[in-house]
Image (cartoon, rainbow, N blue to C red; front, top):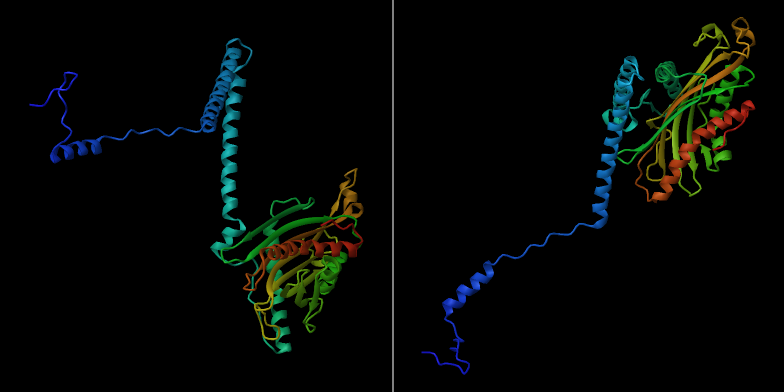
Length: 383
């Protein structure tokens, strides 16, 4: 029997058997831990409450508007026809919104990146391979001229469908492919007012700018540009083997062929009888035995372009149709589509320099048009 303590209670045993200690330890381990719920941030709770309240406010405003409308309708202040018109407007608005969504989806499907991923082929593209024999080179390029110009006219006719030719229009896409190439695609319509000489004068200005393109680029952009070829240049076909040095010291090479055509009013394309029309097409050379590309030294830049020059007479203040054909102002319209590709390079070029090269390519097309404007004596757009 355990001894009795001075306080009258039996003294507890201080020792336990090993089995008892093991059972007690298992009970402690099986005791579930208390779970604490993670407290949500105050700003998150308030944001959720705010969104809930805003949604309730919108629903209440809609109900209030419906209640007011029913009240006015019951009082005879709103006719049944007005109610029917309101319902029709709501349905029409919803249909218009659905139409916008469909058009947005279609535009995404026909955008530059999507079309590039689907085919990798640009409009009006023709593979051009030139050998070392100069006479054969001329025969090849002149043989391509008719088909290239026909394609350019057809493409621009379809691309400008539904667009008012008497107003300016501009659309541009810039994107980088998964392969690292950079594309700049542009379509624009530019009416030129006050041109003396009509389509013929604009055509000659375009021809002059194209033939002297290396001088134009050097003088306006500040990039030193030289022309390596000197054997293919006339008023119908012109090859341009250009090498430019940017302000950062980067070398960029082009090998392009320009095709031209001007037709008098006897074969007027747009039917206005005001001096005919002109068309030009530009494309890059894929392989050239005389002037091969140098990817280990230079960055390659390709371009495909189509340009159409037409004209129309703008009516005067009195809108006299009888005098329009002879006294209305003659306006020359430049319709142009272009696609520039900067090839991915293995050269050690920083990201900043690449971005600068892209910006330079974007402004180069404006440089060309400003040269045409300057030749015609028109104001030059700021770039």
